[in-house]
Length: 298
Ligand code: OGA
Ligand code: MN
Image (cartoon, rainbow, N blue to C red; front, side):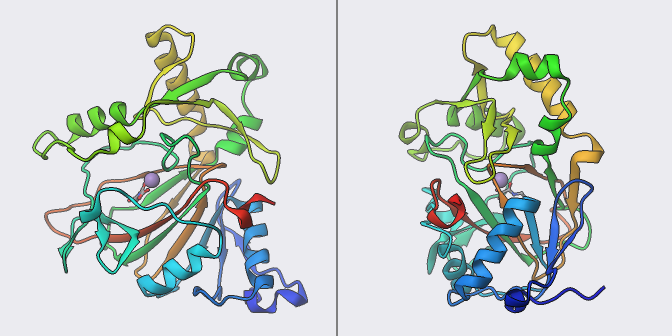
């Protein structure tokens, strides 16, 4: 079936096609720039709330358009590691193994590390937009876990156990994890760690727009669960992550150059995967919509 373009939303065409088992949708023909109509944007946001991960294939956007489009949702976070951002667009955080034009992409050879972006901020990011500027022909997929569906199918006794618990998210914990994974990399000397002291976040969060509950798990960022023995807390997080990342809750995005993917950090987790970084190039542009974004609230 041919999907209606999003500019036809007035005609209430389907517009989105589900691609994952429980979540994720492809939205073809979504214009990505700063002057998208309010109607198209509202429709896109309703898709995001419903599907949690949206893929716009062949978006082919410039960094300026990516930033202008992203800003329509709300203010953007700016990463304090300036060398990982585009000099002309500090809102664009670069991920990959490419160095050019005064920018060095943030590279980690880390194994799977499920997370939601900027969970160490007191008010974490609402959503992220991720664009494939240079993608390897194999590897380097981005995986998404539907922690909203995973919550719904969690054993009731376990649900009761975790509801009300809070986990402490710490940039220092993440820094230590990164150092372990990349021992040959210079230690992070940015002022980030001092800027973001550890913060407690609920283990079960409630989406402000949809009311849906989800599991908020970032194993490499969580130092401990409040009021719980450290080892017991780690074991609980691991048990929940194992449940939430079963294949039935995971959508794997295999990148084509020019794809744009937007995800709701309040409803899904994601992780990078490995690629042969000696053989291939990968360069991804990320914009990060700060928490409390007006357009994503309702
Ligand atoms: C990110 C991220 C995953 C990837 O940039 O926030 O988690 O596939 N990236 O690189
Ligand atoms: Mn991320």
